[in-house]
Image (cartoon, rainbow, N blue to C red; front, side):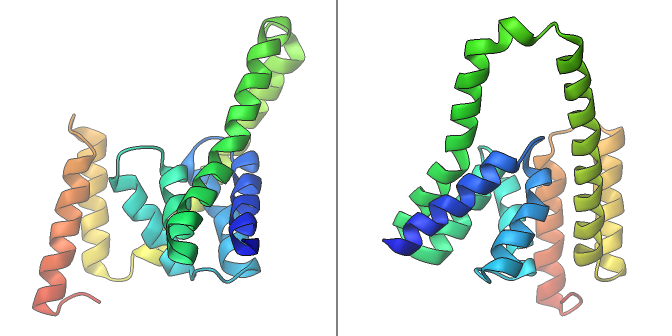
Length: 179
């Protein structure tokens, strides 16, 4: 039961400190899960994150559940999920109680603007780190550029480049051209 509570506590902390979506959670995952506790390697965390993006639902919750499942099975999955969502529920309920009183204040507006800029920096840092880890060879760079082009210039569902990238990876592995 001790490790189950620890899983809950770690993901509660990550959930409480993650603003701006799943990308901003990666530096915290790296610090808490990889460096501090050695529950997973950096590559495993990126794999969990990639899988989570392909699943329905919230990326941060999906990622936490995969890590919890890997640590302690179903109880770890539930502890990680509850830990990740509990801070958001508490924060949302608290904000809902007081939002009308503070939303128009200039200091709150400036605070939200500052948070947006900080979240943008976290997302950029994460994208750069994922690029360094993921773009291992010219084939990966080509898949990345094709996917970026599809996302940028075509009005298509994100699942299409994800599935095409997965298919290309499987084909290249089978042919012995990727690692």
